[in-house]
Image (cartoon, rainbow, N blue to C red):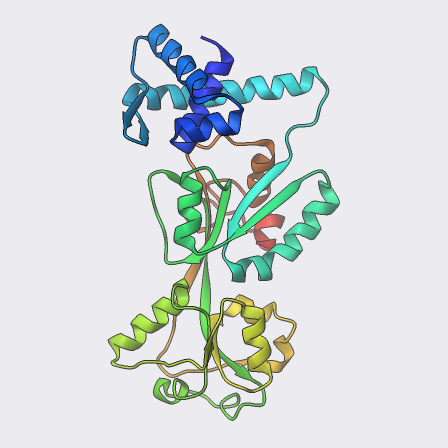
Length: 309
């Protein structure tokens, strides 16, 4: 059994494709197939089920994947020590737009001062798209706001509850009122995120359950633009409270007191349980408090990065 065979095997398992793995590793597809064939013959088991273009691990393949990952990770770290080279320092984050704008500037400032060699790539999309990307090893970590999410394939690092609120300009007639009826609020002009966004979808569902509906003046994914319109007193919006509190317009905005209305969602950080943890991921996760941090397990509220996130 050769290390290159194990590396090829793990890459195919990650991307679930012989052709994609060959492209990423610089092999021809036939050369990669020969490596796996020799590995299967040596082990005396079938590692992959191939049905058309679909490639999945067999039970022996899943067992080899679980055992091979820590072995290759140790080898990679040992090679780094022997050659006196720093560990790979690249991190691929998947985030929703509002979290990226509200949380990443502080985190990047902190990390860049302590770990200037770390290169971060951020992909912005909806939670469902990002989690699918994580399942296919397109991103290393996923940071989203949604209802509590769970899958046996994922490790949840932490979970934090966030208020979702109606917000106006401080100059709005509604800004100083208490117990504003929801029916009155939704009659105002609104600037909203797109329907596919998680908290926007939850709002529509909540209104529908009360036989109400909201027809926004404008829909756009850019929360910064939305709050710019709101602070000009051109309309209201419905956003996570952290977006309002981190906005450059926060002194010109007011969270509205709406009668009998409360909505929460949860900030959640994930990685795939079968992911080979890179040094950059280990660094990020150690600062975030580890898989047992936050409401998902033991307390880690004193941790700097978790506070930043």
